[in-house]
Amino acid sequence: MSTKPLRRPASKELSGREFDLIVIGGGITGAGIALDAASRGLSTILFEKGDFASGTSSKSTKLVHGGLRYLQNLQFAVTLESVRERELLEKLAPHMVWRLPFVIPQYRGKRFKNMKVRAGLSLYDLMAGSGKNGSHKRLTPAEVLSACPGIRVDGLLGGLRYYDCRTDDARYTLEVIKTACEHGALAMNHAQVVNLSRRKGTVYGVEVHDRAAGAASANFTVRGKVVVNATGVWSQQTAQLSGGKSLLEVAPAKGVHIALKQSRLPITDAILVDSVHDDRFCFAVPWYDSVIVGTTDTPYDGDLDNVQAEPEEVLYILDALNAQFPFARLTLGDVTATFAGLRPLVREKGKGSSAEVSRKHSLITAQDGVISIAGGKLTTYRPMASETVDAVFQRLTTLDAARKIVPSTTDKIMVGCEAGVDGLEQLSEFAQGAKLPNETLALLYSMYGKRATEVVALMKERPELGKRISVGHSYIVAQIVYAVQNEAACTIDDVLSRRIRLTITDNQGALQSADLVSRVMAQELKWDERRRNGQKDWFTTRYKRG
Image (cartoon, one colour):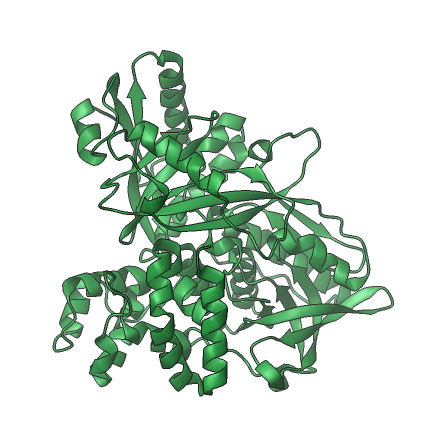
């Protein structure tokens, strides 16, 4: 299938149109539903009030994993589904889902815990079957130290190494949306659904506010035979737009992460780090040119649109790291960025802490016909989407008995472009004459896969686009232009937070890059000086540390 740019449809072209399916929510769940539906032949449009993946789907631990921690709470079904999906996603998105070794250190005096971990990993391996991630292995103390320099050696017996996968969550979500659009879907970011249109008690469409249109913005309506609410922690608010009561009770759980320079935590493998305050653990994950560490897991009842990492939550993570790496002596000054997200957990009776709440998803069709989906996690988005679109077809057949149900085929659809180069060596050959350093080419391939040639081609046409965006990072200006022209980026935040991930790893670097990004975007999007400064001021206020 050929690649094509992802561009926002014009609101005037959408007004009054009817689709088989309207998807509200542009996180990984909504993206997966759009792909599943479009690939089954349904006319589909997706609306996202912010940017694609701007909520939970850009603020995860960056893992595609089976959920080893869920075994602690005996969530066997969730773990089984997750490990099998992990194996599949490696095949469907090899440029976005990368195999990563994880180390669990083991210490003297914790015999029962060590036995419990080994038993859990054995069960984990059994659930994964004969996948290429293989079985876990025992490590000597020297092997643990080699993978995790500076780890606490007092009482160290060795460790266990197992394999999961990491990803770039926001870019993965974007690739799913791109693939959905290549199958015929439309997707519009910065388009907020402000009302659900009802007729005789049934929702038949949505009213949308185009937030990217500036002063020229106006609401427009789109009709849909079926509407799906895939807005995660906003599910209840969205369901209530039609005037009814939400049947889905979502319990937001807050997860906080920090980023460190790799020089301050020079690990080659991911590592499980025990908390010193409770019985949880964090992951420390090498990611791009940084190390991401998290996550916390606490109930949240604050503003869903303004979730921040609090100082005590950052210290919780630092305490765990300093206990595990005593000579690192990490402080708040070593933290280059923080981010916080909300998991859309479905509330269950009798469950106390958010850590105990199941990661299973819930699918509900309301009396007004709106289908709501919440829960689950990034790894299991594909079966969640398949189940949701099955429900969409059931709804469509009640409206039209001649409608035939088409089975899902997303277990065979590659996520991303099928045309382009197949490896870094080929990309280097394609980039000859562009004068890009090897580390930049490696970064581009890890972010765009086969599509990296499209970014390099921009720079070959305009060599000035090879300039770096931020000192100490390999991102280049061509990525800004590509984000606008091919990935529907509308704001500075779209570029620096999700098309590239600078706000996630280096807050100060992102702030220092905002002026350059604003000037490039102004040229591409024809912003006047007032709009450019307004964009820059908003971004600076949002990310400037107090």
